[in-house]
Image (cartoon, rainbow, N blue to C red; front, side, top):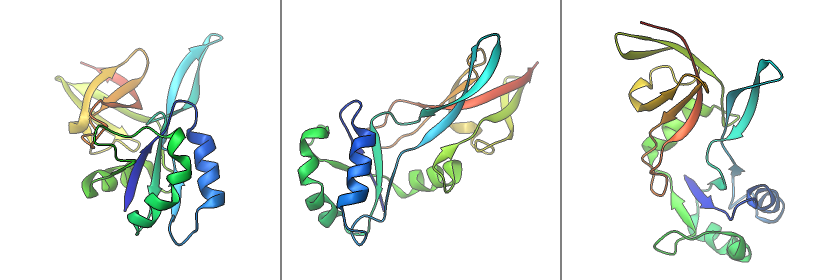
Length: 168
């Protein structure tokens, strides 16, 4: 099972490395963040950059959430509890499946490409293929798509790289 841990701004990398070193592999199977490719224009050309998909959030994989909760107690000062004072938020199975499909083994979303025909978005290449219904907004100038993620505590859309090659 996957759980989301919200960290204080700028502390996610530090907590992730500390968790890898200090928490037993029997309790914590993996700790990671999701990233995505985006295009930025500077120096007269477009460049691919990597950005965090969920800023200041860590994903933890475990089969024993109670033990993980105990192991995370020393990190309490660097975390943000949700409105119900929970440190960990469970990722629902359908969202975990979406993230596994989109991010793959490296937990990284590459740029997607597509086109818009008669007001309907069609994704032709990349991790967003078949996920057109989740796209809420497209910024063609920044080459970004806002993707709906109805996870608890993640109600606002997340960004993913999307280049629209044509529109009619």
